[in-house]
Amino acid sequence: MQLAVVVQRYGPEITGGAELHARLIAERLAARHEVTVITTCARDYVTWRNEYPRGLSVVGGLPVFRFPVRRRRNPVRFGRLQQRVFHRQHSDREARAWMDAQGPYTPRMRSWIGHHRDDFDYFLCFSYRYWTTYHALRQARKKGLLVPTAEPDPAVEMPMFRDNFRSVRAIMYNSHEERAMIEAQADNRDVANVVVGVGIVDPPPVRAERFRTERSIDGPFLLYVGRIDANKGCEQLFDYYQRTHAAMTAAGEPPPRLVLAGSAILEIPEHPGITYLGRVSDQEKYDALSACTALVMPSFYESLSMVLLEAWALSRPVLVNAHCDVLKGQARRADGGLWYGDSAEFMESCRLLASDMALGSALGAAGKRYYDANYTWPVIEGKYEQMLERLQSEDRR
Amino acid sequence: MSEYRIDYAALDVDDVMEQVRDHAGGRAGADPSLPAVDRADVVLRLRDHLDLDDARPYQLQRELRLDTGWNVAPEDIYTSHPGFAGTLISAVRRLLRPLVKLFVNTDLPLHKQFKVNIGVAAALHDVMQENATLRADVEALRERLDTPDASR
Image (tube, rainbow over all chains, first blue to last red; front, side, top):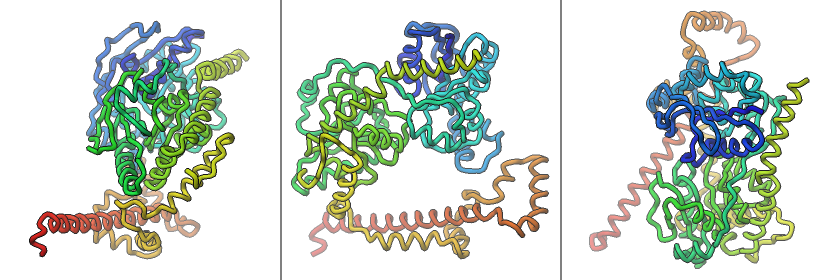
């Protein structure tokens, strides 16, 4: 089949979120289909500044068509419009103005897709909320497939997206919670769909001891991997961890350490129990994951956490924020981790995981079984292939 | 931990979490950095703020000097649809309102939300005031600690 993958940014330097998700899927689908990537020249998701050259290039063996972003994002205007459309009654015109302000505003891409619609069997569009996906789905009409990567934020409730959720040919959800949320908003249960998610890059051989020796870390520790940002729930994590440390120390129990890996946007508190590694290599990340007592994921908004899958692939348990339905749902379905809704639950979970190694092993083993059954690449690719074959057989009728 | 009953061979995280919550509840107040909280008092105060049956929210809005533009209001839907069509719809609806009100009060949910929002704003206002008072108390105590001679 001729498949187009539409995504707001694309490149090997973009190592997170829906863009990495799109690249991994595109590269896997390319083994069986002719895949073309349609994207923008932007690399920075805040400004959408054009950094890549426009036109055709090859990335990871795939042809990539890049279109220039015509307007950079004006954060003040965008913020004002977002306040309006997220929290007040608003008109369609205001919603469209918000979409244009959010970007990446790429009218040439829109018209190109309109002209070349017949050159492709299907358009696989990532991230429902961006300008590129919103308009690509409208141009693709019945050839549009959506990977929403939706989080439970006010954008998903905006009426402007209901049409797209209802009119796309099929939706590839990241989680059962994401499907329930979108179906509740758009009443689109009759649209073909499947809960797929994404696989991960196969972890290399890991050595937990190497990490402990090189970083001089003894005893139990919680590991956080990712951007250290208030938006990722890290502020609350620091607060809960410091309370836990104080309470366990006062009770004469050795508290687990909190080890952080990733770029820091938020100020990290000076605390004897907190170790900040900075950005680490993939090898060190996997070594740290295999060595940790549990991976902690404090985010309130996630559509799918890849680092959670990486922890389970290495048979390690997770501790997640109960206020994120997706994370809690995954931990629950997998029997692969615990969750916390407040500081007392965080404290008690830390205490339990740090003292009961058998529980950590049992949770990790259950997580690994869940990962093997749902998130290995053969499973993911199989779900995509089944959906594409189903749509193609419907088209032939 | 000996006080937990966990079947490692047939793990059920819901069961483990239930035990975690029981223990967390049992240890409430064990956190030395937190004062004990009278939950019943908190609930009562919140209910007082969110009372929807009287005119107090409007009074609160005036007391707190909140700009009316910040809150949701039944008129919002028309102000966001300017132009001839919006004005026309608004006028027709205003004309029909007395008749419609005989059957159903369509503004009620928005009025309720309007009041709830003011109640929440008032509760936040109280929390911030309380926080400022506590911070002043902490500062005063810290000063007393830093200058032990002065307090003798």
